[in-house]
Length: 417
Image 1 (cartoon, rainbow, N blue to C red):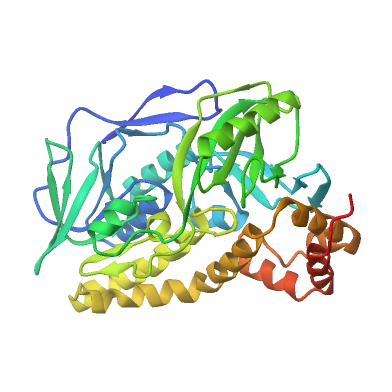
Image 2: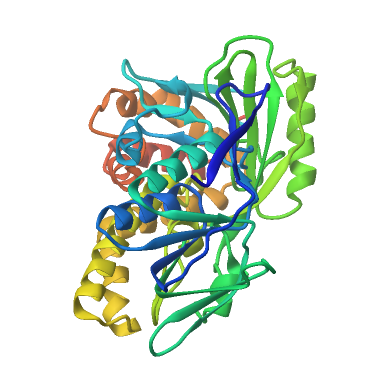
């Protein structure tokens, strides 16, 4: 067995660390599929392929799994079901949220049932890798992919691991998260739109709901959040296009000054794609998840869309092996399929994002007033058909509601001080 638990973390509950034993795998034959990236999407894909009998190896740049990841880790019950883990590393659950306007007005969204779960993302990576390994997938850590070259008979992944500098397979799946250099090297381009996420573990004085802040003072054009995990621990985070560290420090200072947090841990940062690559396939290669920009444009969340796209990828890979054809032309069906499944939601999410980014704080404040007085928030809370992950359906529902047009009118009207 290549994995062993070597430590536990005292800050977040249920945090385990996964590392390679001293020996490395000796790949004596060419693999069917190499997966680059051992995040939830990479391991999910590897597990699905291994269960169908394919020889799969996952290359991961990190030396071990289980350490904290810059990700809020908020998923829906539907997404949790897709992960199909015997034990989900859930830290807390949410049935609603409190949203603050720039001037401090609040909108309370609440339902009787659980709408979202906060999972320990580090432990989720570990659990998904263990699940994939149990299905037959192999993992090699400390191997960062530097370039990928497709040939007539195989495809080669070159890494920075001196012990194992290259790997060959018949097909490669890139699931390495935000990886503009890698996708550019594959001649698939870079994300045309992205933001930088910031996050830190914080200590809070007591219980609180999932809280969202819309003030552009912290996050121009985006939002920031405080996500309680239990045991006096929470995650503070935000998305921002530039000067992310400055805005995040400003946000943390505000939370301390208003006694919403007691102390903060070390911030983490990562890129978040907000628009899919124009092409997510090439000769002997598919790109999925965050690497492909299959992310919710409103929130930056990528697990659910990534899982959906991974299912599409597995179907196309099975067809490619059956046909013995791994050309870009044969693999183009992947792009068609994932666009059918999540393309509409991404387009509508981008529409909502573009509108929101054009609003200044005065207009956001007007929108809050209109939403409160029109009862739009209550209508959305009471509509059980709207689910956490169905952003497209939520956007359509809103624009079909008369209260939406009253809200738009209020946004365009002058602000009453």
